[in-house]
Amino acid sequence: MAKFLLKRLLLAVPVVVGISVITFVLLYFLPADPARMYAGPNATVDTVNRIRHQLGLDQPVWVQYGRYVTRAVQGDLGYSYRLQMPVAQALASRFPYTLELTLAGIFVELLIGLTSGIAAALRRGSWVDSASMLLALLGVAAPPFWLGLMFLYLFAYKAGLFPLGGAGGLSHLVLPALTAGLGGAAWYARMSRSSTLDILHADYVRTARAKGLPGYRVLFKHVLRNAMNPIVTMAGMDIPWFISGVVLVEIVFGWPGVGRLAVDAVQTADIPLIMGTVIFTAMMVVVSSVLIDVAQAWLDPRVRTD
Image (tube, rainbow, N blue to C red; front, side, top):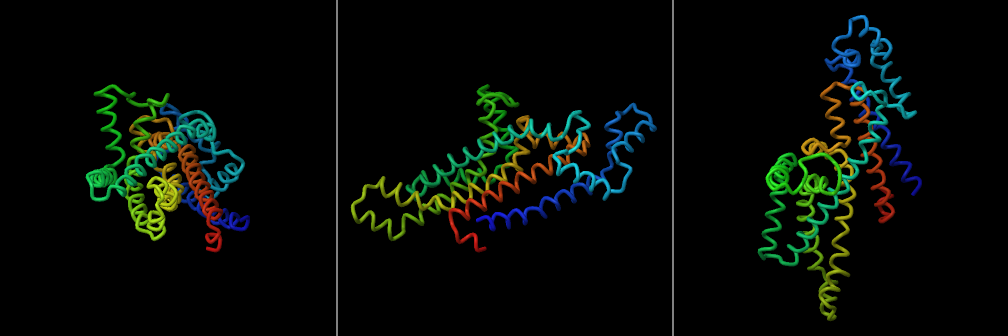
């Protein structure tokens, strides 16, 4: 297992390095002037040039990148021009909100997707099956930002059941979590329906029924237990997607997470903050992917031989 983990970590290093290089080079050629952003619109040319020199922005791109990497491995991701605070501190204050929304979205997609998918499989050909698959199709087709805007209009603005945005108690989390989770719930509904149908027609399920086992025991002990294997794998793969994919949801609902922070950084050309959010998100995706690989290898030793 240790060898497997080391191999996955070594493979993750080039991914993070490649992302950092591409992002840094693109930002280097950005038309906006970070020194001007830092100095303010009323600063003189001499002041801007002095700040540019102090920040090392007059150095070649490879020198700037080398200095950035040296500081980054020590935990220093730079200083935000807009927020007037260290980037690492800004990320630390926003990440709990992104993590909260990620976990809530995964809970929603599992709860709705698995329930509707299993119900559709057990009532194959009925109106329950048709309604579940129709809702799954709509969930896949509807863009998250459109769903979020509709939820805000119907349930927050018109009905007044939920806040119009921001973060706070459970009421602030319901609509963003539904928006983030409904698209995934559609995929889980289709997958759980297909997996459950396959298990229902398996020989050992027929044997269990022939022995006279009660229907609920056959369902929970034989059907659902085996049908959940691909679902567990898919749920683990969803974590990296959610961490990097809730940006639109955070923007629509004004959710103060890392995604919203990244968008604000792009709009104000806050280069250190842009680099920090990109590197941080990439690290979270890579770490979660490695943990998923390790979990799968622990559950199924055959994975370690890949």
